Image (cartoon, helix red, strand yellow):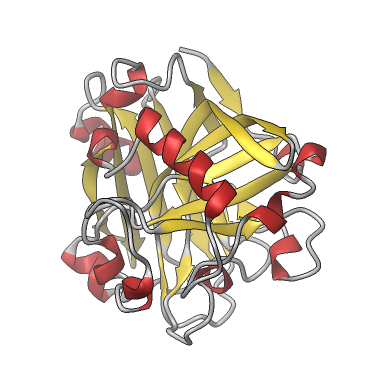
Length: 280
C-alpha cells in the first residue's frame, strides 16, 4: 500500500468540489432537505449535485484556500458540524470546453465542515469561510483501481468529537460501499454533472468554474458526508473540540484499534487515513 503525503501548497492548485446528498438521510439531518427539494434526480437515491468549495484565483470567497490538516477556524459560527467524508485526489481530461474524464489517484479522510445557518443562499456559501474551514488528512492512500473489487471497497468512515475530555461518536460508521453512488457510477455521474449542471436552488452552474481548469493540477472531490449519530445531530462544534475522522480498512483494523489510537496508544494504523483537528 502506497501513501501520499498531502502538501497543502500543492493543493492550492487543485479545484475543490463536493458531492451533495450521497448518503441516505444526510440532507434531512443537516436541515437542507427543503432547499434541495427543487432538485430532481434521475434515480431516487442519486446524489443531488456538485458544489464548489475552492476555485483558485476566483474573485469571490471561493478563491480563499480553506483547507487545514490540524484545525478548524470557529469564526463565531454557532451552527457548525463535522462532515466526515472520503476525499479523492484526481487527475482529469478536459477537451473542447468539456470534462471528459476523471481519474481518482488517492483517497483519504476529509472534513467538509459546514455552517448550518439556513439563509437561502447557495450551498457553497456554507462551505468556505476562509482559512481552516475544511479539514484534510495529511496522509492519503494510493488507489489501486477505482472499482468494486479494489482495496478502497474494504474501507469504512468513522468520526468522533472529544469535548471536555469525553469522546463521542459524531457520524455513523459507514462503509465506503454504502455511498449511494461510488466507483464507476459516481465517476460517470460527476462527469455528466460537471458538464450539464445548471444554476438551480442551492446549486450553481459548474461549467463556468471549469474554464481555467487546464491551469490546475487536478480535482479534489469530497464524495459526500455520512449520516449523524444522535450526538452529532444535536451538538454543533464548540471552541476546544477535538475532531477525529478515520477512513480505515475494516478488514485489517478493528474498531478497537481506532479507539486505542484516540486514547493515545502508539499504534501504527498502516491502512488508515486519519484526520485530527482542534476547533480554534
